[in-house]
View: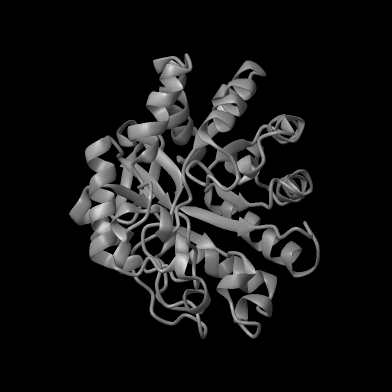
Length: 316
């Protein structure tokens, strides 16, 4: 029987329930908050209310997608999970450049040391802080997923070093890796690199490809490699409306990729109701799934996407 590692301990796969694999619960202590107000998810009481709303709508599990040294707070995530009843999977790894100062240690630490740090967070416990200096206080709250990213330049330079460290940490611990991409650019090259360092395709979640939902051959090419397609821009209406997202999902299912689809919202403060935003973390449950049913998606297809696929994608 497989399990997920949550901030409150291991949970057997049969108890995962509805799962959204790319959400943001709480962000603190990062330079990015100074210039990006949409990232200011630093009101723990509001974050807990958002989780309670998600739970009431039928949500059971989610991934908080901020990794080490980017404002992640393991103690706050544990408290939020305990109070709300939502099972939260936290991330180690690294994130996009806006979360770091130019002199941050993520840009200079040797590859082997980064791999060791990521492994420690997965097997021993996550560190607090790290945004301004090397993290020193370690909790006993374990990460359950590795986060990595590609910029628009793809796999090159420092990004390649970081990706190899993250990929080996995931492979060594039997953990999955979610990969931030810019519209899927560079994904195939990154998948190949991760495979070369021991990570199987079914341990990789490719993020943000649905920032564009017109050129679907790109989606097909990535999905054909065997990875999970994490469609996580639901509620990002500057990229697409629900109708376009639904047409894309139908297309991918008809092409045979039902078992590789995940959905989530990747929210910012302007899209969380308890931060005075417009949609809420419960939007998929309250609005998007009813829209899927209206368009002819079956209950089994929806259960596969929201419950069965997260089990396969996230369980060890």
